[in-house]
Each structure stands twice: as structure tokens, then as C-alpha cells.
Amino acid sequence: PTMAQSKSLLVLENFIGGKFVPCSSYIDSYNPSTGDVYCKVPDSGKEEVEAAVKAAKDAFPVWSSKSPLERSQILNKLADLIEQDLEAFAQAESKDQGKTITFARTVDIPRAVYNFRFFASSILHHVTECTEMATMGCVHYTSRTPVGVAGLISPWNLPLYLLTWKIAPAIACGNTVVAKPSEMTSVTAWMMCKLLEKAGVPHGVVNVVFGTGAKAGEALVCHPDVPLISFTGSTLTAQRITEKSAPHCKRLSLELGGKNPAIIFDDADLNQCIPTTVRSSFANQGEICLCTSRIFVQRGIYSEFLKRFVAEAKKWKTGNPSDPTVNMGALISKEHLEKVRNYVKKAQTEGAKILCGEGVDSLALPPGNQKGYFMLPTVITEVKDESCCMQEEIFGPVTCVVAFDTEEEVIKRANGVKYGLAATVWSSNVGRVHRVAHRLQSGLVWTNCWLVRDLNLPFGGMKASGIGREGAKDSYEFFTEVKTITIKH
Ligand code: NAD
Image (cartoon, rainbow, N blue to C red; front, top):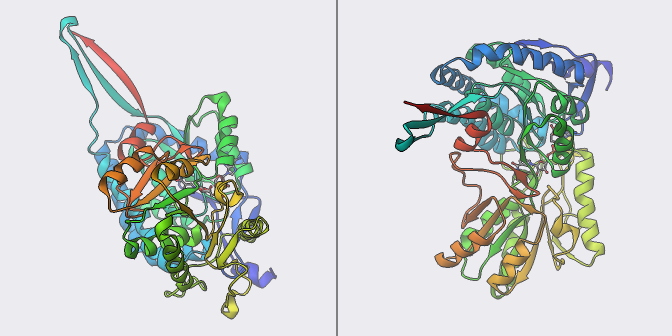
């Protein structure tokens, strides 16, 4: 960029011990819908992480000894402040990530607000266990205390939504945190930092260090004074984090990738199923860990489903994310777009058929978006279960549709990947729905719906999709240390 351009650029700063601190070097973060540099993100490393951990450690004694009610009131205040600025947060999230303004307004930011409200409430309602051993004259009870400085690392697809899903339970439980958002989507985390003091969050309770995974992320993972890491991101990064944290025996919560099946039986209500499955395949450009990417359709309705599904997918409007009539915005980066496109090419060379989208239909973009990272919703068929498009997480607007015959067969095929995050089952037969849901290797199963969440209940994946669960009780358990105390009278 020219000097004039760089002058108008947004320059983010780390937030350490309640103060914004500049960094010695910066990285460029792009607006995916235009291809222009949007802001400068601190390229933090060991030194910045060290300062943030120290600030978090210093703040821990006071914060951890506050009552749950005091912490709850502060979380509620923060929720109110984010909500008051909802539109500005939504605009920034859309610009930074490429997602539609509609999605940011209706999903990302409202959920970030709700994350704080939810944990502000749930922290007031936990009870610990107590048992009695009358013959020994003993009672046992458990006591839970915050762990210390929590390291929180989040991805770029739902930036503030996923970051606050970690910050809220961590601080509600009395921990202090050092968070590292994705270097590609740091703006809303920085905006949130500006509200912390007004909400009454004491200095050092929430510290945010911006930068890359390799430098800032790894420094946090390796820091001896950070006993727990909550990570959401790819399976590959999780393996690296597991290795790096092993010498310190850290507590890890890992929310990872998916290769989520939709199983559609011939008694499914297609009027409900088709629009929901288009949404579950392409919402947020297919960049949600819970997005459907393998659709198994029972043979009797296969051709009807395919015809109607493709027609519906073609109706999805791709374009300028700030246009409220647009369904799909831009993918996160040039590299990611290339990666997603390569999956489609690979499928083609293997003999699969592309029914709509990439390489088949043309995409007309407004003049300002010509350099953005857009692609159309893409439907692939005649693809083998062993194909990389059916095995690997693509994380873009690409979904595969294949036929199946029996319940037994489809369960086996749905389970035949390394991942196990989310599945959807469509049928009007209640018995079958229960049977299939029970046998799927998947942390979440939605039947006749998608993405309906009760935050009270566990969220997380099986197999390569993760370790641990998040939710009211699960996050409470993860972010606290438990002790069993026995009293003899
Ligand atoms: P990623 O693994 O590349 O990065 C995630 C975060 O980890 C980023 O902040 C990154 O900077 C950091 N990081 C990278 N290398 C690191 C290292 N060596 N040490 C410490 N931190 C490091 O993932 P991404 O591309 O940002 O996100 C997409 C992935 O996230 C997909 O696989 C998706 O399925 C997954 N995801 C999972 C869930 C879930 O809840 N299960 C939710 C959203 C996204």
C-alpha cells in the first residue's frame, strides 16, 4: 500500500494488563471481499506473551477471590456493552472475515453477547457433590477452584463468537486469561478490549496478544505458567499443540475439524430437509466446523433430492458481503480459496461430476469485489467414499451428494472417516432416528434440523474432531480444579 493508504489503515495493539501496547512488528490482515489490506495486526512473540502472562498472573489472586455474583455482574455488563455496539462489531466482523453482514448481525455478534450472558448466569447455579459414609463417620465433598492463567486460542471462521465462548466461562470461573485470536480475524477481539474497563473487568483479567500461531500461539502453549489451553482450530494444529504442551502436562480442550454427514432417508420431509441442508452446507461460506459436506440420500429419493437440492443451491446469491440480500460472502484468504478450488479440481480428475458452482457456473461480481476471494456453492456427485473430497475437511462451500440403500450401510459409511464432530439425520420414523443417532460416531447429532444449540449441553467432537467438551457444566469442569475433601466427625 502507498503511504496515504497505510495512514488510513487500522493498526491494532496488544491489550496487556489493561493497556493497549504497540508491537515492534506487524502483519497485514486482508479484507477478503476486496483483496485489500484492512488492518495491521501485531506480530507478537515470546516477549509479548511473557508480559501478558505476567499481567494475568498478577490479576489472578484478586479476581479469583471475587464472588461468582460479582463476576457475573461484570460479565453481564460486558454483554450489554457489546450489544450496544452490535452494528459496529458486525460491520467489522464482516469486513475482516468475508462473511455476510447478515450472518454477522444475526449469528456472530448476538452469540458473542449471549456467551457472556449465558456464563454470567450459569456460574451462579453450579453445585458441588457431597456423599456420606455413615459407618465411618465421614462426609466427603468436592470443592472447585479456578485453575490460574488460561491460554485461549481461536480460529478465523467465527472470530468473536468462538473467542467469547472461551473467555466467558474462563473468567466466570475466576481464571484470568491470555487470548490469541486468529491473525486473520483480530479486529473484533481488539474492539472488545476497548470495552473491558467500562464493564468493570479489572486490569490483567483479560489480556489479548495478537499474532501468528507459530510465534504468538506457540509461545503461549509453551509458557510454563499457563496450565491450561483451550483451543479451537484444525486437527493438525491440535497435534502440534499437544506435542508442545506435553512436557508441561497441560490440561487441553481441543475443538477441531469435521467431515460431517447428512443422512437422508426416503421418508424425510424434503420441504424442510432441502433448504436446511443447503444452509448446513453453505452457511458462512461452508466455513463452520459443523457444516455438512457428505450428503447420503436413500436411493428411492436420490434423483428427486439431487434435482431439488441443486436448484436450491443455485438460488444462493454470492457476492458483496455488505449487500443484505447476499447469502454467501468471500472465503477467508487467497490461499484458502485456492485450496478449496483444488479439491473440486481433484474430484473432477477422479471422475466425479460437478453439478453446480465452481468451474460450471459463472460468478458475476460487483466492480469493487473483483479481487475478492469468492466462489459459488458447489455440489459434487458420483464421488467415491475413499476420495479426498469425501474424507478430508474442505472447509468451504463444497458438498458431496451420494446414494445409499440400507440403514446398516449408511451408518458404516457415515462413520468411515477420521472425524466425528456433527451429523444430521432426516427421517420421520422416530425409532430409526434414535437407532441411527445412537450409532453415529459423532459428538453432536441433529435430527430433522441443524445447528439448534442449547449451551447447557456438551459441545465437542469424537475421534480426530477433538478432546473434551464445552458447555455449561463441561466448561465449568474444564476451567476449574476439583478437590475431594473428607471430614471425619
Ligand atoms: P488453525 O488450526 O490454522 O488455527 C487456529 C488458531 O491456532 C489460530 O489462532 C492460529 O493462529 C493458531 N495456531 C496455529 N498454529 C499454532 C501453533 N503451532 N501453536 C499455537 N497456536 C497455533 O485453524 P483455522 O484455519 O484458523 O480454523 C479452521 C479450523 O478450525 C477448521 O479445521 C475447523 O473445523 C476448525 N474449527 C473447529 C471448531 C469446533 O468447535 N470443533 C469450530 C470452528 C473451527
